[in-house]
Amino acid sequence: MDLIAIDGLAGTGKSTIAKALAERLGLSHLDTGASFRMMAWVALNSNAELDSETEVLKATQNVSISYEAGKCLVNGVDVTKKIRDESVSDAASKIAVHPQLRQKLLLWQQQWVSDHGKSVVEGRDTTSVVFPDALVKVYLEADPHVRASRRNETAAANVIERDARDMSRTSAPIRKVADAVVIDTTRISISEVEDIVAGLWKSAIHSHKE
Image (cartoon, rainbow, N blue to C red; front, side, top):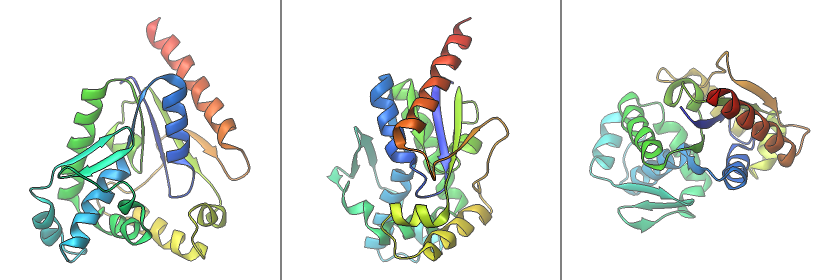
């Protein structure tokens, strides 16, 4: 599958790097986490119990979501800025444990790439579950304290708590796949990471054509 899949925990630079790569390489860009954030925003505004998959599914069953050029729409309403609130981020992590919701959004994400063609797709479990056949798979990691500072969080404890939840969930826990290139972004710049992944893409595309 002709796409770059970028995986990793919160605060590793996935979104920034994915956007820069998409622009540099002329590819479409999808933040899979945005789909969970949009559903989380709906669940919060519906006062659904986040730990209850039944309530979350009921709240989101007739919801239409869209992601185009970084703009997030829920039933046609622009919620791009609203879903970046930390409360929505935390809620997204909580509802992401629900298997039926994950399956629903997985199909939405796969259809998005089918509609948009060559893409840079970023998000947790992107390389392991959503696009295991991606031409280039990258797993980003970084020190928890550095990741916390990047997300404007007051302590690494919040990041570590979410890490534990995302890595221990029953449905599609975050993990490094064997064929993903692991890059530690703790001490290297965004542009350096971008150069590495762009090189991997160009090499993979060249080999793929031969």
